Amino acid sequence: DAGVIQSPRHEVTEMGQEVTLRCKPISGHDYLFWYRQTMMRGLELLIYFNNNVPIDDSGMPEDRFSAKMPNASFSTLKIQPSEPRDSAVYFCASSPGTREKLFFGSGTQLSVL
Amino acid sequence: EDQVTQSPEALRLQEGESSSLNCSYTVSGLRGLFWYRQDPGKGPEFLFTLYSAGEEKEKERLKATLTKKESFLHITAPKPEDSATYLCAVQVAFGGYALNFGKGTSLLVTP
Image (cartoon, rainbow over the protein chains, first blue to last red):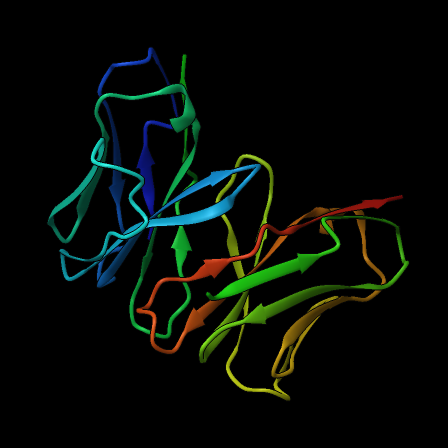
């Protein structure tokens, strides 16, 4: 298995632009998580899905952020409009079950200028 | 509020110099405690899961232990390739299935 695949690896954009991050989870995993990592706050949960349904989006910072999972093999995290404070590394992770470990992708380094 | 605190923030060791990393947690109910390793530019990589106080797990030079309030990651005779950030995370019994992470300990092992 190729593991969790995220794209792009790096994204540089200007303030106000729309940003879309993509994630392909490991096949057969029922849970998908989006995390954001910064030096100040560490790894923070944004949202997670179970069987393509959003379960907890309380970590989504504000309405500018939205996430979708249209099928079991694909998820997107969209920021519109982007702001400099959104600059961070965004990780996607998947898990096969409720007490199982999370498998992380390599992340997307987002820089908003 | 559920909290996970890791200490120290950074640790520098000489090769062969054993030490321990600490993860203190305050949660309403622990479903599991997880240790991850993160190398620069990569996602966290799973090391261990501990479920109950008194449990221990080992992998090569690493040993993780768990009490009711904290977990330790013991590193015996570390090598430079053990240099990484070590992350602790808890899964809360009544808080869904996501992991709540500490900020990590950055470990540097010098030859």
